[in-house]
Length: 285
Figure 1 (spheres, rainbow, N blue to C red):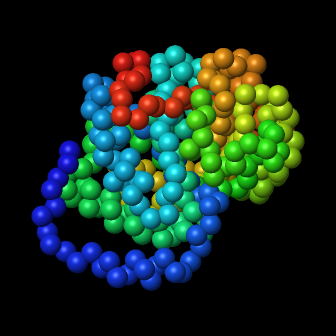
Figure 2: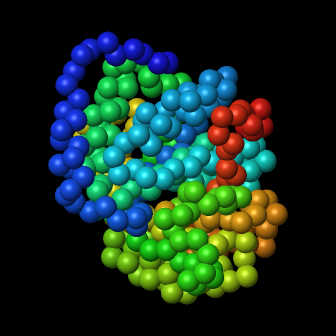
């Protein structure tokens, strides 16, 4: 998949020193890229190698202001734990066996997007984009809040993609309308999440809201849905999600319905990939 760019272009190195002296450069994850992808049948191994060996770096981590990333995988066993069966996110709900999560420096979304659009055009032109895959749930998202199980103790949200968490649960909730999303967020932040986190294997939950993709995005990535109504929750777990699924995560949809503030469209467990290996590739189907 790798192409060789033989053009002798000016890299404008002198501009980098100027850019380093301006704009926000904090550590807070003000934005995220969350991308759940399904490799086409028979392409699982090749897709995994392309993503880990090339795209994770050239298409993500090498970009300005994207400062942390981690890949996660759902084996067939994990896929079968997902709900609801009729999901507005994944059809069928088991679709999307890999998910990648990335943090972007707060206040740098616009700067990052200019680069990512440009680099993806270049990667496509140079034959470095793997086509035998489907984007199931790909969105840049703005950070809304983080709720911690242990208060001020333990890793912060900016550590979450580097800390060796053993599992991730992705929860997508749609509010009944744009006006209700703020109320839903407040309920999650002050009531629901503190209660569910207490004594659980989840150390924190980060909450994001999706933002529209630019008009000049790649054609294989569909426009983001639910921009005005949706919230994406990332539960970071200290243990394998299968060990506590029934007690901790099986009833998340019921709690939201009871609140009267929205509906759960996806609850999906993942475990971390092991970079540089093909572990779990043979357990996807």
